[in-house]
Image (cartoon, rainbow, N blue to C red; front, side, top):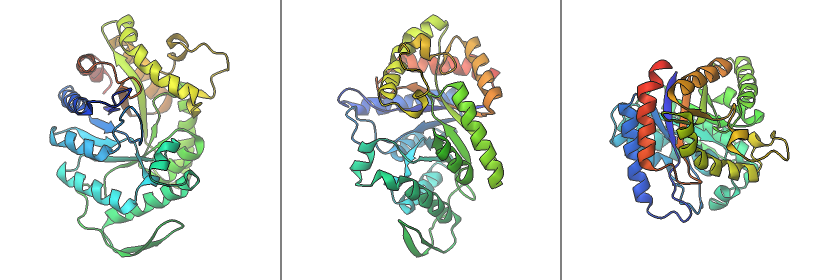
Amino acid sequence: MQFGLYSSIANPPRGEHLERSIDEVIAEAQAAEASGFDSCFFGEHHQDKDGFLPSPLIVATAVAAQTRRLRVGTSVILLPLHHPVRIAEDVITLDLVSKGRVVLGVGVGYQPADFRAFAVPMEHRAALFEEGVEIIRRCWGGEPFSFKGKHHTLEDLQIRPRPFQQPGPPLWIGASVPAAVRRAARLADAFVGTPSTSLESAKRLVDVYTDEAQKAGRPARVVLMRDAWVAETRAEAEAVYGPEVMAAYQYYWQHRLAEFREIPPGTEFTLKNLAPDRLIVGDPEMCVREFQRWHEATGADYFLLRLRHAHSGGPPHDKILRAIRLFGDRVLPHCR
């Protein structure tokens, strides 16, 4: 198994002093590298009142400049909002700067505010996304090409320079519903599952993904984002992390995101009810058992841990650093 961090950079409720949050995330990435983590990933949203940083590639570049081994990636860039040639060139640039440490994760998006910011109709997002992935791949190939789609027309294009990684950086697709998972199987180097799915839901999506990848003749790789926390005791882990993750889940619950629709109406909204088979929170031994269980159940060989939450802005930086080091000392070595 490999492990990375996913860091949401925001400072609710008004997005003040985000420069401090950026410094903290860079320090957390450095601690993750020293503790044996493999990567650090960042996401994209727009118009969020909490100041959620909208440009993950810029943050990834800052982290790459302050690390030496850690892979940097996006999970996810909202591809329908951007011209794919621009994304392809930006990723090539960062791949060269970082000497081949970039992973490009892309998704279709789900928040209307993101699409309003760019005047992109949400109903076009799937077609824009699929065209974008194809164009990015062809840009990275370095050969002359033309493209004519519903949304993009390109004539006699040849992108230089080539990426550091050949034939290009890994391209991962984040997905939370069967249609998007099938798209990932056809187009991506890996499927990235969202962090708040239950184990049963994750297994169903992985089954859809692996079946579709087999039909497409592509290798299947499963990457799972997880809401996770380790402390010396389970009680301490729940006390520190519980309020932060429940702030995020309150938002998902209210907006009836896909991974929460299966929860029966009337279910009491508590950590006790939502944690089982969804969160990996506890002492080191429990976390090792849970990661192994998820690996065996889903085949996932890569986990991205969401320690820092945008909806709450926490846990505090010092506690995140402590959790990273404890993961490195007493969890990761038993999951390799």
